[in-house]
Image (tube, rainbow, N blue to C red; front, side, top):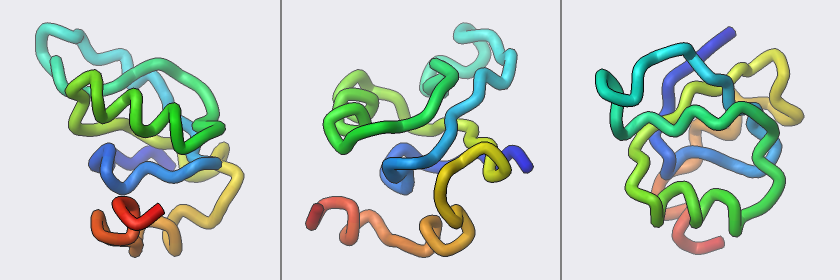
Length: 78
């Protein structure tokens, strides 16, 4: 299942998909397809100004329903 989430909710193990949306229409949507493999990668996505990503919960290597319960405060404490 595809879900659009805030970059502040992204965790290592989530699989980002390219939703096929134009960067002109969705300039704040990160769309480089692949598995998120490190906290540094997440920090770089945020630093580049992206606000949302589309993840594939079936291809993610974690239980995203549980992972999405983490708040931004949880992310900042990592």
